[in-house]
Length: 338
Image 1 (cartoon, one colour):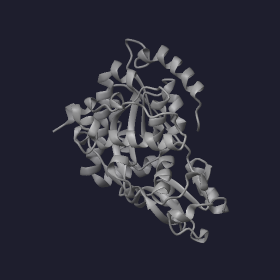
Image 2 (spheres, rainbow, N blue to C red):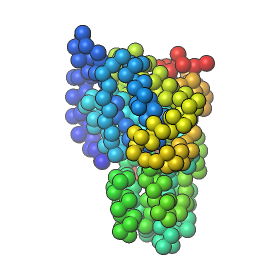
Image 3 (tube, rainbow, N blue to C red):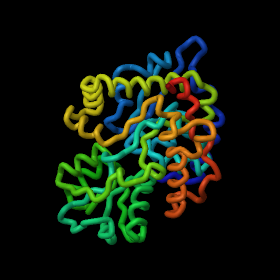
């Protein structure tokens, strides 16, 4: 979903008027928190299934699923969401570049084999260079836009030479069957579905460096988070508990994920294997967000910078933000550090 600058400016005005009062409905009631998320087999689903958010935040929690990151940004901007999880870096960068004060409060995982470019065998596409002149399905403005641009540049293929067809992941299944597309750049569960339908993977996210990689993150409006630090700490504590159960009670955790997402346990196990998962204690380490002066040298921060450069080069954003220091917030997880 492509948002214009004027639309986001209007949403910013609405946000500024409302964010300080959104955390609590009335003084005597529990805080009202709405958590958005995308489809994924992920420890977040365990935290949700086991009611860890409700317990740790002592809040009235509601959940809302989105088909992609760009589709969730307007909801965050208008403050109808408190948190958004399982979202990629590019939609976050786009929002920041357009003036929305989004901040990463928890980096969930790095894709290593759960997303990438999958092609139809009959398309004749053997590698990235052969994408020139072909039709590829993509969620425009998502992590996929950054990845496609990166992979095409590596192969010295002009970005404009590939016909990009913007569609939500569920639509890709139908377009694949009907022959409307030659390839897709997408994430699980559709990535696995297309592979199982005979698709061939020519690139996956494991081919990206950590400093310009594909991460799923949880974000909040920076102003809202600053106004409600206890809720944010409760939120990240619940995220870590979902991770801990995934590590220590794997069978139960995977069963939770499968039930929430409506897939079989074997499918859930396969998809989960495509991630490098991060704990609450990992957040402030140099391999994730760092802490203090180390934030700007962390993979999360550098990925924001490198993603912005790519999105600017392909015309997705008008300029690269000067700094992302206000958009990476490991301080909310410091109490989880070992």
